[in-house]
Length: 162
Length: 195
Image (cartoon, rainbow over all chains, first blue to last red; front, side, top):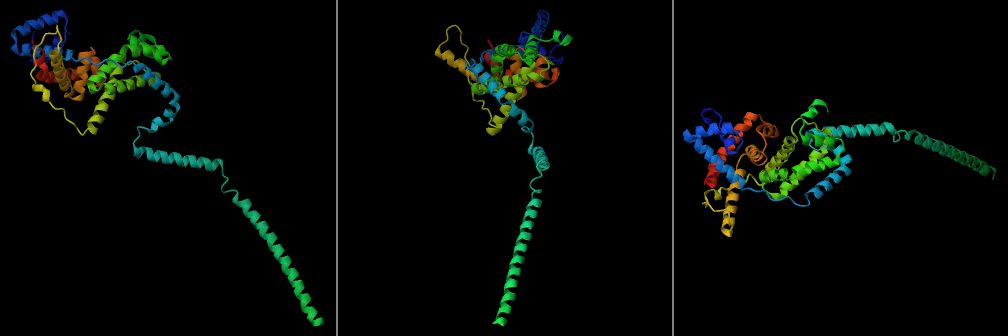
């Protein structure tokens, strides 16, 4: 067997320490290790690391892990419609989100204006009403002036008659 | 599902059932992978509460993406890809918040005595704690990808192909990445396991 280190196959020594090699490959490697001090040292150290890592137990899982998870899933289902609306905007950078938001706002306003053209249209009837009133007032004023005129002319006759 | 289904692993089949609306299959997947995901994330971030929170997020994402799930890789590979992504993101944010806090290597030079495991005493317990702390620090000091690769290789029995897919690397890149990682660990931890 070629030396795994010289043969650019050092992973073989890691696999050996991890017990991943099949029996035949392991046997051949052990024959090599017997005559190669460098590989022997790497294999021994790797086995030692493997043992040291064995000592690291992870703590046990909290008993309410599943309950918390299913509650979050339920909440997610309840609010999924909101997520669906907001998700496309969330990871978007500000420089992309701003023009999009502005465009959406403009489109919304345009839509509203087209659907309810009210604010501009009522001006016309309103001005007509004002104009009718004005005409009415003007006619009243003219009537009044005419009455004043009549009174004036009567008064002007009357002194002469006196 | 056709011919592709024949080569699917059982977990992927369960996930496809989840996709079709079978909540029980999700429960089976959760039961099967809960501990390994939490433990993997725990060893990456080394905080139990954070590990559980991130693991919740992993399973939430699995559930939420059920409708778009396609069994292109082994389910476990996909699961650990999500877990690695979330844990490494958390580590980056955390490191950023802590202002690039560096891990001290104070315990690396502590003497380690060989003790028998037959009768655990207070002294043995203390020695064990010191050794454990040393292991934790050595793993935490590895670059992120090396750390994730070592944890998947050592504790999750994942093959090189699976680790490569989970980390988005080629298989050969993972082999050399793992060797470099173990090289670092050998320099720091080999003295602990020698008999």
